[in-house]
Image (cartoon, rainbow, N blue to C red; front, side, top):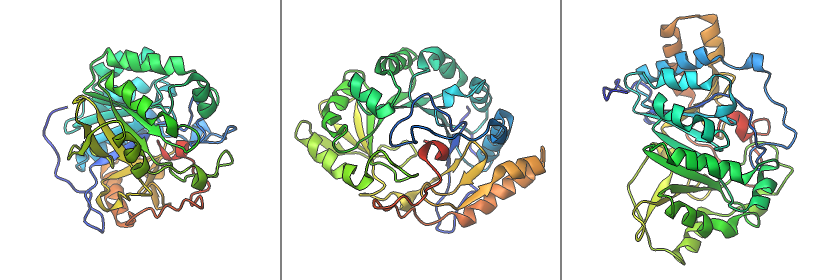
Length: 336
């Protein structure tokens, strides 16, 4: 991935430059996390999903328009058949600075080395608890040992950085904040604590009751560690703090409720069925599946559609803890 970068061409109505796309390759997952999807989820028919070739075409178009970071997400992206093909092909594109992955790590023992060889720079692993019984409760079907083994496999491959993402729910896992940080300190990992996103109907828990703010998490951590704010950024919305006595570990916060990050938003999301979402919490979107299939091989039309989509990118998401504004779109459909 050479350093040469295209001139940014994706600027929205509010002057924000889009340089980052999260590309969901599937809505399917081998876990059923309680904040992500219902236990009995109805998945998108495979015939409605973008092909890997269409995803690559769209990814290349974004790079030509100035995007230099692509994150592959899901569902669980590594359950998509032949997914390495997409990583390998995008990893060769000039101008792409950062090819990253969000995963639950269940497949990393198999895929970590091929992903590294394909050009993946960083990996984010979703891990909310270190207690096996609680892990099974929060994922409904998961085996903690398999996820921890996947993290170990990734550590063996010397990625630029591996980070944990932990969604914190009051009375579910908020008492493990320090344990998760200690786990990261022992392995030289970063960690981001995430306030739950109110996406999709949730019959498992009351989001307003289970809400645990980033400020409260920081307060809890300050009872144990000395933390200082940093200017470190990875292109996303995370605010990072450095642990003074542990230089290889940073603690981040993704705070859609308590510290809205919309003002500096630089990203868009492509769902597995080809819907370009201009905002995590709004329905403004463009159907890029229709664009690529109605105009096969025509990159000029595709790029113009992407440029035009910037005009419907909203100012912010306006999340409300007391309602699920996007009732039909769970997190696995959105792209994690």
